[in-house]
Image (cartoon, rainbow over the protein chains, first blue to last red):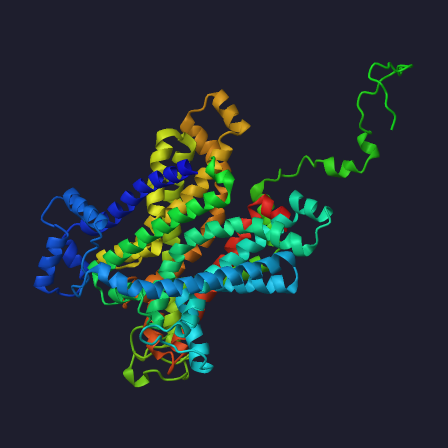
Length: 308
Length: 326
């Protein structure tokens, strides 16, 4: 196991260097003044422009700039936002809200997705299965911002069950509706993944053996069928984190939740390029770390992976 | 069951041992299975897939929907004579349906139906340019990495990993923020496509790794074809099916990406007809004038839904294992 961990961490280093270099390259190696381009049609404050120029070492050659930027990241210096507040300070304030929302969404999508997928797979071709398939296809097709508006309109305005925007401090009961919206797409994918692996597991030799040993459905379904069907779901949760980040940006923006995603959303909408770049970098780094952790977890769950 | 010792010799050797132990073909029902009509075209993956697809009503329904959207995108004036962005009058702001304006007006007093009809071409063009890009880049990277292997594979696969590690909407947000002044359909498609190709490359690489050890590749090598010719003539045509299978689903993904980026305000500028732009501008009128939001959302969702359904059917039809499971 230590060898597996070391191997995975070493593999992650070139990807980490590559992604940060790529983002940096896209922003600062473009022809023209990258800072002016980032401000779009707005005229930036000269003081801010000077500060940003110093921060990104724009008077130096490109590779030197990148070196400063990387050493900065390792020292926990992620730059300064548009308003002059350090990005790390904004993260410290907004991250707990996003983490709460993301954990709620993760719980909803995993529990509901696995439950519906299991029942669908066990009753393949029945009415429940057919309707679960149709609903999951609809949820996969409809973009998350449309789902968010439908949820706001139906549950917030028509039925009055929830508030359409989240109050200050983001109380947990206000986050329930956004968490369901955020969970919807991945819920549908998890239903389909669980369903197909449950169908596959039902015709395997070990399930037949379990039944022929005389075990009942109450034992075979949770222990033999479900547990082995969860491997693709765990793998999916890693790649799903990217969907969750983009989804959180849009959901937090629409419901006005004071999280990391909303900060990025506002920066995008207001055209504050440098802040956008800092926050996307943070999200990509987070995504890399989470995927590394999922890989390590996967090795822990499935011994076959470790020895490849 | 009798336990005959091995060294027992049969007392009487049959006078004539049979040529084979299978009943004559004419005597068995197998004759139907084994019969080959010489004139019949030999079946292959594509013919089987088409046979499977054409029996499915959902395939025909989604095909009709997609063709209809394509006609709307190419000839929008067949469906509405109202110009989408001119003749907008603030007198009509958020007004309800009127004669010639079946869904009413937006906040700016533009005709909702006309804007939605004219938005179709934007979504479809972005979708098609993106899959063109991802397919070309994916085939280039995937084919060379999978077929030649070695250091080229390591290099190309690591490059793919880097692009794959950035969720493509986040990457497109950065690209579009930098290229804010040059926002148009082509630049937006480029921003999405540049980060979406690694999944195509991965699928193709895996399939080529499987195919390149086939007997027909060895035969081609024995005949003396060059490596490049073997790749182009024998390996690639036999490994392209999974790429085709995911193409339609990626097209749906690209349409969603365009709408999401336009919704965020880093997609196409407001002068372009785009469902994402219309939805973005309508969000503040959710309470007062919900149809400004509902009509473009519905158009977007139905388009993506049709492409995803047909994409899944094509994917299943091209995968003999999935076909057998149904």
